[in-house]
Amino acid sequence: MRIYALAVYLFLYLPIGIIALFSFSAGRSASQMQGFSLQWYGKALGNPFVVDALKTSASVAFTSAVLASIFGTMAALALTGMRGRLRVLFDGMIYVAVMIPGIVIGIATLIALVTVFGAVNPWLEPLTGWKLSMGFGSLVGAHVLFTMSLVIILVRARIEGMDRALIEASSDLGAGPIATFRQVTLPMLAPAIFAGFLLSFTFSFDDFIIAFFVAGPQTTLPIYIFSSIRRGVTPEINAIGTMVMAASLAVLIVAQLTLRRGKPDAH
Image (cartoon, rainbow, N blue to C red; front, side, top):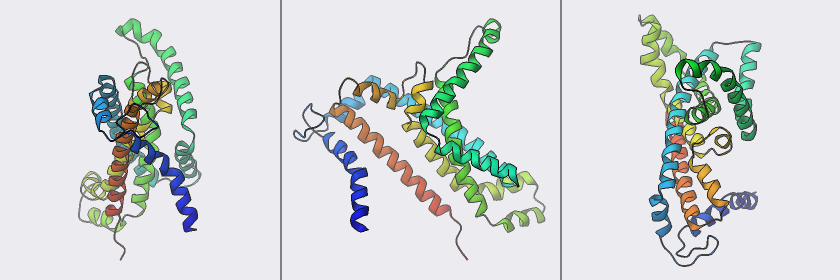
């Protein structure tokens, strides 16, 4: 079993390690190690197209993560008191949103947005002078709908592990629903909400498939990388991929540590 596990991990992470290794090559070949240099990291960070794509990805990811955390927490709280077949239906819809392939979400979102824009723009443009189109808003909306399910799952798991006696004690002591939520419920849910925010940010930042369909004129970092590799892979692309991978792993580790620290102690 240890040999099998080692083989699986090598299969998963060896190609990533090779990309990271070749990103330090001093030559122009992306598949050969020709000396050691950090020049490609400097070129990547000095490339204005890379910087613009990075800013777009970061802005979309941050906005999506904030909205997904807010709406996901609200949905998780609402679903907590739901029972019966309706609860089963919503549970299934949440997990389907996580499991469904990204290309299906991208195509479905594109069709839905085009349909809405076609129905609204003939009325909106004569009144306001502007019309709805693909871009930053469509990117954020598509990513919020996708990543919100992650927040719901994390927050609901945290709610189920909460000590309900604390909430009941707060009510018995005269605190209203809003005060109880602000002083008791929200602090207990904060680790799960923060972890959901980090995961939502990572999934949105790394997404290519959904963004490819709804980005319009916007260019995110994954879209820029895809466009670049069609002209050939260079060590600069390896450097960009290595930096994105390192940042994503760091965020995921922080999210995991936050969830572990936020778990209630067993008594």
